[in-house]
Structure formats: C-alpha cells, structure tokens
Image 1 (cartoon, rainbow, N blue to C red):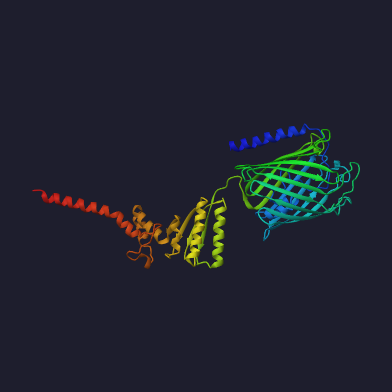
Image 2 (image 1 turned 180 degrees about the vertical axis):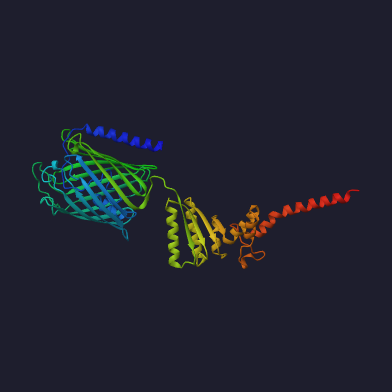
Length: 480
C-alpha cells in the first residue's frame, strides 16, 4: 500500500510541475474547430483501442478484442475549448484482419467559445473500418456526419483516411488525412477561422523496450485553411500493479512567443482485469487563458486483460468424457493455447474419462500443448480414468498425474491412522476387477504398479521382523 501511494504521489508531483510550467506561458487560445471529444495522452501511431475511430481508422485492424468505452471532458473553467462533452464508442475486430467501430460524440460547447458555437450543442456520428494487411501495414477509412440546431454545425460530412506503418516492435508511424473533403472551409469572423477544414497528421511512436511499458510519441498536425502547424508530444508509462499514466503537450504558433498557445494533459487509467477507469486534468493557455483548467474521465470494458491491480489466480478444469473428433480436437488445442497465454490462470486440470485423442498424432499435439502450458509457468494435473496408451502420454511430460483407482488405493494405505469404522469402509469400497488383478494394479505417474512398489517397500521391514524373531527364539533355546 505504501508503494502504491508513493507511485500516485510521484505522478501527482510530475503533473503539478508540468501544470506550473505550462501555466507560466502566456498566449492566445488554440484555433477553434468543430472537433470531436478529446482523447488526451494517446498517440495516433500506437493507439489500438476504440479511440482509434477518430484518431486513426487504420489502427482498427490491430484491435485485440472488442471494447466499449465512455469518455467525458468537462470545460467549466476552459472558456475557449470546443471539444467538451461525452463520447460513446464500441469497436470490435472482424475476420481477415478487418476491424470496425462506431462512435457518437455529444459536444457541449461553452457560451464563451465564440461564433458560430456560442453554446450550441452538436452531435457527431462516426463509423470507421480498418484493414491490417500485415503486422507492418494497415489502412483505414472513416465517415462522419454532424447534427445540430445551428446551421453552421449541422449537416457536416467528413471523410478520413489513415495509414499505419510498424516496421518492428520499437517504432510505429502513421499518416492521417482528416476530413480531406473539406466539410466547411469558409473563413468566418471574427477570428477568420473555418468551422471544419482539412487537417493532416503525421505521428510517430517509440518504445525503447519493444513493449508498451514505456512509450514516447510525437504528432504533427497541419491545418490547411489557416496554414498552421501544431506539434504535440505524448508520454505513456505503465505503472506495475496500478495501470497506465498518460500525458501530452501541444503548442500552436510555436515560433511566436506572443501568440503561442499551449495545452497539456496529465491522467491515470487504472486497470482491473478487463475493466478500466481513469481521469485527469487539461490545462494551459490554449484553453482560454493561463489559468484555465479542464478535466476528463473515461471508463472502458474490453475483451482482453490489462495488467493492473493483481487478482487472485484461477484454475481451470477440462473434462473429457468422449474422445474428441477432428473439430473438437482443434477446439481443445485452442483452449489450451489460450490458457497458456492468459495470466489470470495458474493451473489446468485435465480429467480424462476416456482416450483424449483418436490417434497418436492428435495425442502428440496435446502433449505439445501441455509443454506450452508448462513453459508459461502453469501447473498441469492429469486425472486418468482410462488405462489407454494415449492417455498415458500426459505423465511423460512431467505433468502431475492421478489415476482414479490409484487415488482409492492411496486412501486405503493412508487409512491406518483412521478409526476402525472408517478403516473398514475404506477397505470395503468396490474396485474394478480387470484393473486390480494380481500384477496389474493401478499405476502412478512413473507407470509402475503400486502393489509391487508397496511390497518392495515393506520387504525390509518383514526381513527385520523375521530376524528379530529368529534371534529371540535362538536365545531361548540356548538357555540351560
């Protein structure tokens, strides 16, 4: 608990220092546009979740599993921030490397945002489709339409295209053309800014370790109507046992000291298995003035596991009541491979009531899956109720094996310390006839008869007893 509080305190101190540094920069606000709800701290080149619907539709093909997310941005103290409100999005992967998603943005503009916004709300509906050509390349396209009672904000239709290139696990690059059809490019008074013009993003992400534990990103946005560049840097760090910390910093009119507008964000998202929740702060002169502050929150439910708060480990029991055919065999292998890669499970029990495979080739594939489980640190327990040859391939892979009849025999052997009634009941349990004939007793994981092994263990004791009796008898006969 103390370590967790130290991590939270360090993140708060870092966010406070960045906030103080950004607040000290005096400038004019960021250019107002009919934008979507903000996605703070995420990079278009590396984001694979549902937020890629508006960030980069090409990344829809990289989705690992379905995701449902809500994001809310509050601008009570940000008078010039337009993208405030709520967004609801759902995304899922499809077949052949495709992925799709649908998002609704309910934007609540403040009254102080300026013409033509002035408190008029509007809604964006966005549909995205992405295709992962390979692990290196992906393409995507999205279409969107706006709805509002304001004539300037209603009926806007935009088309966005994206391209992602990931040469290896360390680097990722993306190029996105947002609204390249130009939904509303006319310059409006008093600031001479369009409602929604073409914009182009060029983003890159770098992961020093090749994993998502640490990521540094850079994003350069170009606004065509105003001929303006807005650079943006992102930083994402995984906090073990907690979640993921994010931060970004964007600046408009970067070379001009008097007009430079800066907007930054610092947030933390906490993971709990497939559930995540988080929030953070928006700050900077780009929101209105140097003291403007906004806030945001997000909640998501996904079909994949994210490392966060540790959860108790689980064990899975797979019972095979009939020999699987070819299709069922493939499903069994897929389940074993999934359990090997899922960190939530630490043990697997295979209860084999019959032959686990219809051929020795299928049995060898099950053996390979058991090897994969053991290589991932999973404990494997095989319970055999059949003495078939294919069922005994499990103990050859050093998996813990228990035979049903052998379990009864062990109970019989351990019952010497139990009361007489319990001892009698244990001895009177019915046993299978063929499996308990003399010399063919139940076998353990070393494939040796328990009855023969028990007699070998007791043989030295019997010899000692015979010798003692012989010595005692010889002593009595030797007395006069």
